[in-house]
Image 1 (cartoon, rainbow, N blue to C red):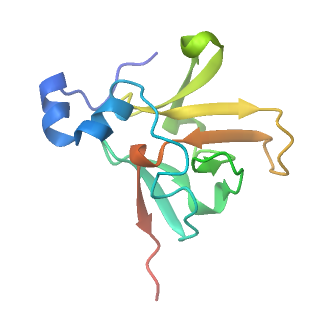
Image 2: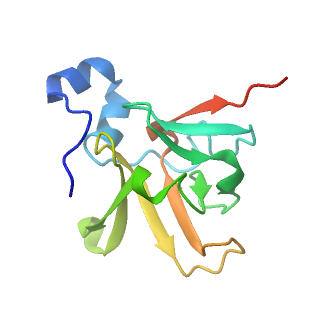
Length: 137
């Protein structure tokens, strides 16, 4: 894995993030299903990493998966996220990290049969994201 572009000490991350944000972004936690602010949001815009501000996903790749967390079928570009094997919780999953600061975002799943162009579901914690709405003319 390439080194993070944004590097901070754990104390600096703790000062910047709320305890809940820190638990998910820096300790690979998971927010409770159906509790995140973006689970059912339809606002058009760009979803950024809450820790470093990197642009990660566009709202036009967000879809209804009914899983309890925001779901996207693709990041803005492949180099915006890092994928790595996660063997926690007694299963093998693919963890999604922000490529810029290596913060935990969620997991990606394939082959679930959703009618999307990629057949992937980036299941992302709302608390890992910040939505920047498109400007309206």
